[in-house]
Length: 289
Ligand code: 7PM
Image (cartoon, rainbow, N blue to C red; front, side):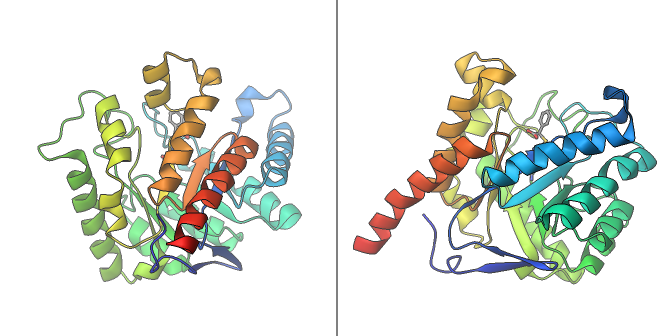
């Protein structure tokens, strides 16, 4: 349930504003590596343009541009590669669509450059832990999404183990990251929290964390959740990546019911309907209690 303290909030995202008085959808934009498209740079940018246009038409409030470096099991992407993939896409999204762009990056140089290019949010799955990232993010004045993860994407899924209940580990981690940000001059008003579904977590961890999202609501910051097409759906239902939409919609609905504000997904149109339908029911409860 949306709490009164988070209701009516507006997040300043560079030149753009994000209304958080009702849940919204963040669309994941594929940033195709040049090597995957024969036409090189131009082809890749054109594919990103067409995909973004669709995400926005379908009702995405935010476009999340990923630099490939954050995926579980992923090898690190050299800075120069990340820059040439991400920067032209951010510039295009801002110039051609005036979109609210979030950038999935851990590199301080990229944070500085995308902010100058008009990005509206920093989404760092490593919670600004790379050397220089905290300072770079602080200087952008943009909102930052802090996500729970243990270790590095490359190795985190080997044998995730926690000595505490998963939600306690997540809350403790995020509380210390919030304090670290505040000390560096990133005020609470700029922070978004994410439990990090699928990051250093077993299926049991992920299911329990969704049930215990109220533990995160206690931190009184906007919550971003990403469960779209993830292995928690695949493992539970025995579905391949292309067959996970119904499972992902069920999770999106549950996340909204448990106070999620920003729902990060691949399939924007069906998720917008699921989120809006869920929200209408929750509103009736608030309006008539
Ligand atoms: C393979 C496995 C490819 C997993 C991509 C992924 C999140 C994120 C990602 C999230 C935030 C995906 C993930 N997941 N950022 N970036 N929260 N804030 O499904 O849950 O896109 S990468």
